[in-house]
Image 1 (cartoon, one colour):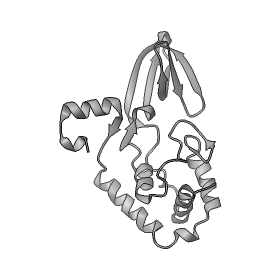
Image 2 (cartoon, rainbow, N blue to C red; image 1 turned 60 degrees about the vertical axis):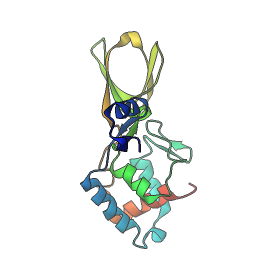
Image 3 (cartoon, one colour; image 1 turned 180 degrees about the vertical axis):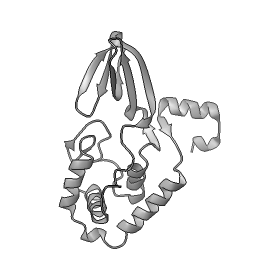
Image 4 (cartoon, rainbow, N blue to C red; image 1 turned 120 degrees about the horizontal axis):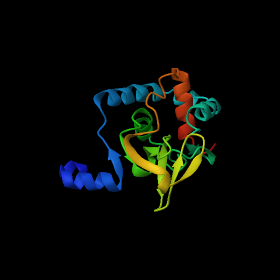
Length: 180
């Protein structure tokens, strides 16, 4: 709603405080509608939630927590608006549409020549905590040459592409389930 005011200075403040937010492109909207049709075709009640859990563990759990299990790079999905199919598909199909600052990818160039890429969402004047796919590292600020904060999420696009229709339905059924 704030972005709709079309005030560049206000939008810049919003991005600085909250993070990146973009409108969905036509191809993302079309993909969302295709998946909604697939999922809403009375097939979801026939979905295999246990198979969906396995797909979640292989595809999503390295970064996301659901029902107390999983990674810490991305948001914990347990309390999210998972029952809302539009919300769920929007976030899966267009992970770069809204990226709160706490989940923006950062590339840290270290003074020793190394580069570290991850989510640097915990910082203080002396240390930056960077969460990668494998670990959380505490990097002293004195060792950091430059930091570049990306306009992109660490969550890749196209996560549903390698899945067949049944696997998509199973995954969505698990993601929307109220319990593990």
